[in-house]
Each structure stands twice: as C-alpha cells, then as structure tokens.
Length: 157
Image (cartoon, rainbow, N blue to C red; front, side, top):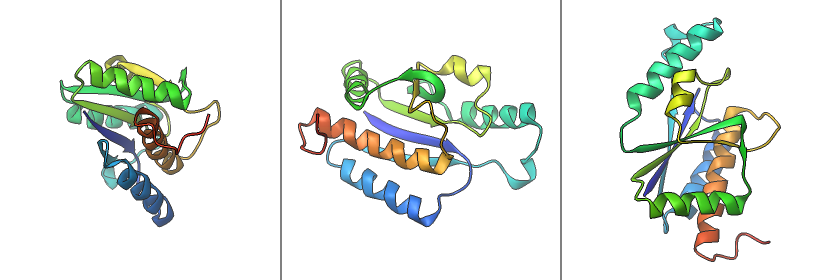
C-alpha cells in the first residue's frame, strides 16, 4: 500500500514544508507517503462558496482513480485515536488497498459528490486548524501509525 495526502490550497510555508518532509522521510522504511497539493488556477479563485466547492470537486474527482481508497478529513468525521489510525491502516493493507488517499478539503469543506466517494470520514479534532498545519499533523499521524504497527518506541501509551 502507498499513501497520498491530498490537500486543496497553496504551497506550504517553508517551516511546514520542512516538518512534513521530516515525517515523510521517517515513514519511508515502512511505507511510501506523498503530499499532493491540489491548487486551483489563480483565475479560478472565487468568493462564491458553491462555485469554489464545485471547482475543487472537479479537481479531486478528476484525479481520483478506481484503486484509490478515499479517506476524507472533516471536523464532523469519526474521531480516532492514534492507535485507531494504525488499525485502520492495517485493515486497509489487509484488504489489499493499493493507495489510501487522505483528503484535506478546501476552506469550505467538500461537495456532496466528494463525500459520497469517501470510504471513511475521519476527524483530527473538534477544533479547526489551518490547512497547512493539518498537512503537518497528518504527516506526523501517518508516521505515528506506522511506528505503532512496527513496534517503534515513538508512540508512548
């Protein structure tokens, strides 16, 4: 299995990029993880929420392939512990999932069509975070999940 973290928005600030790269590198011995930034063209930017979600939907669904197992991150999703993340990833590997896609949607959430394609919806917290920070948090949680699965001392119970 491989993991792709998809995020709508602009490129990372350098301090976020450094942190994401740090965790993705630490995860390499166990699994391939890639961060994919999905940017709308500047001319497509709009203040119309419905239009923005529609444009993001087109971008996401165009990229989504049949072998992708889509996990949507949403504040209304299922709250999972780090151990639960590791169990979900193990379950996906056991089921033969080729690519798990963890989607960080746009500022206004995602469309119903994208929600319908998600196999699972998870929540990181009841709090709302900036997208760039969520990218770093997801990279760390993926590393933590695989450290749990591989009995690394990183995660303490």
